[in-house]
Length: 329
Ligand code: TYM
Image 1 (cartoon, rainbow, N blue to C red):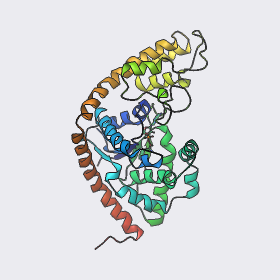
Image 2 (spheres, rainbow, N blue to C red):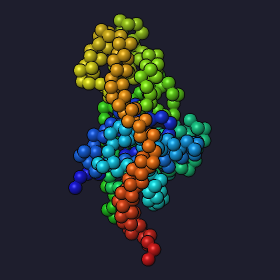
Image 3 (cartoon, rainbow, N blue to C red):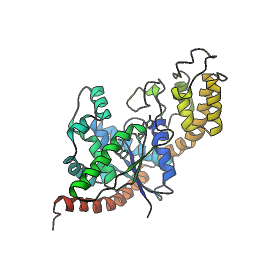
Image 4 (cartoon, protein in one colour):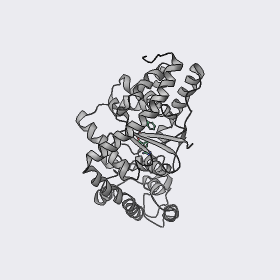
């Protein structure tokens, strides 16, 4: 039996290159060797202020991007979280063993509470819903970016605690990271993020002129004040994007050229723009074709939800059974 992989993306804002190189590109690679389930986690997107009319559109667009990036519904399951109600049911069961202190210490909870100036129960419970997403399918591995590592630790804790208290049901999932695990925003101030100003991230669907308009003024390693100052590509959003997006030959060129000041930041940015377009151009094209056929995409998601539900219901039956919840007779 193939090992199971589960992962998801929130349909909030524009999906950017951090999401692509941190997670999605790895998902495509994994679908040939694992039993993969990929979700659009629309209920996670409800934990902060959102516009209901936009959420549905974003969900569809995310699905189009999944398929356009190379996820094949014949090889993996693609579905929307809210279409499989067992996710929220399992969240409740897991919340009975989740520690309030641990949830309050989650970096993302603290950051978002600060950013929005307020909080709600769903934002606090967010990592429990995420644990439910993963444990519901007994996934052995979860491909994500580095910012999700703390949530994955909590997922393993919950699986352990549950198994200890009620008997062996859940698998403790491992975290799968890539070399694009932490793509930095173009202002060089922390990770590229959907909730930061648009000019600091490159959307997967940005056309070449928009990509260049964002890359050209992007902040680089502060050590390179003059063209002749050597830099460190590890301290530069452009360098880190090259590591994720470029060929080994180009990466060697960047490392040598930047650390010896043989190349300038503009040369480095120009080559990055070319490499991004080579990869994202065809994805963008397939994406607009798919957006023009929404019914077909919703049908793929319905079929995916049916297949996901078949797994989810059997695991939830096991959970109910060991927790003393009697199913109706
Ligand atoms: P989300 O929607 O914020 O991001 C989706 C995926 O992209 C990765 N990512 C990044 N990787 C590298 N550099 C970046 N700048 C960057 N920005 C985003 C994220 O790590 C993630 O893998 N809580 C999750 C969604 C989720 C989930 C799950 C993931 C819900 N349930 C179950 C895995 C399994 C989130 O908000 O990701």
